[in-house]
Image (cartoon, rainbow, N blue to C red; front, side, top):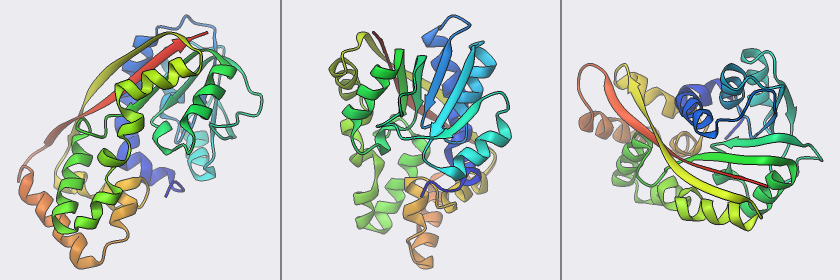
Length: 250
């Protein structure tokens, strides 16, 4: 599900970059700090730290070699290593950040406690899967109309215990972090046409594409056709993506 960096980049990585910019503006970390990007994926947040935060150094860790290979290619100037959010192997940094990761971590309190051990400032952001990720919401609504069993895979139903403001605040305070704040970040997601919207769902990387890969051709075509009927027939498709961001310090 998480092996292919190029497929992830086309699906949602490209939208995480503008969120990362707003996220760093909000954090407003002084230059010269060391950074650790946990679950760095293809390097969207790591690259943004290098471009906007004037860090002393940045290390990205991720369990996927496929993602790390893509990150090393497109983010020179950072260090990328295999790592686990729940066990950072003794790594430390001034600032520990994580983008779009915690919904896929088996033990979120353990991971956030590890973030708090490793860093003096700790922050993360997650997609608002319930209502804020319009591209995913449109996909899952169509998928459930075609295949009611899709509800078991819908991130909007699966991840509310992690990706909403109250749980995020609880995870941060529960890890002993102070001055905890949560805010929403909204960015535009503009697709050139329907093909630009649809083809990333065929890449098998990410929850919705992984589900789509399990469908027989007739059901997949039915989801595609239903989505096509619900989106503009011509020109760009203008949607938005919302993330919840959380920060704290020790």
